[in-house]
Image (cartoon, rainbow, N blue to C red; front, side, top):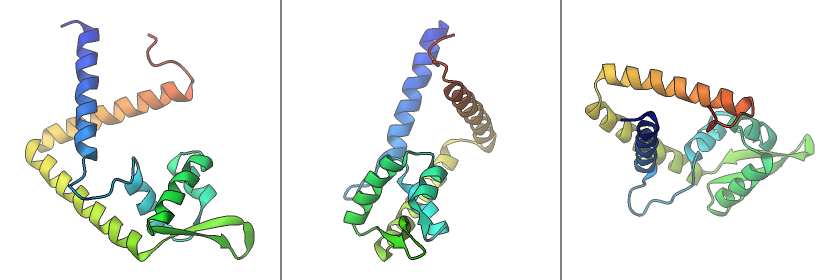
Length: 151
């Protein structure tokens, strides 16, 4: 097998895995990529400012505000002005957000348990090592503004 074909197969498999990991049970709302991280960050840092939340998540504030608006419309979280600085918005989970976060955590735990039945501990260790190396390498390429498709 030539190297390009192997890389194409690897990317296709990674796409397939990510699609399967994002799949939601029937009837569950889909909150988009990174919803778990967003909700768990707000739960851990109740009253976090939108600016700090954007920095923590590594997203642009404008992109975050679009997401927050959708979550507000679904009664998952609330943005309110900081009493000490009216220019700042603070984010808090509503009871519906707490309940949703618990559901998402339970779903993630079920997925982790399933993965544990598919891969051995040694395979998991190897996968962690390889995925960390790949993520670090891609981040380094992105940070240096290099095109990852160029050798």
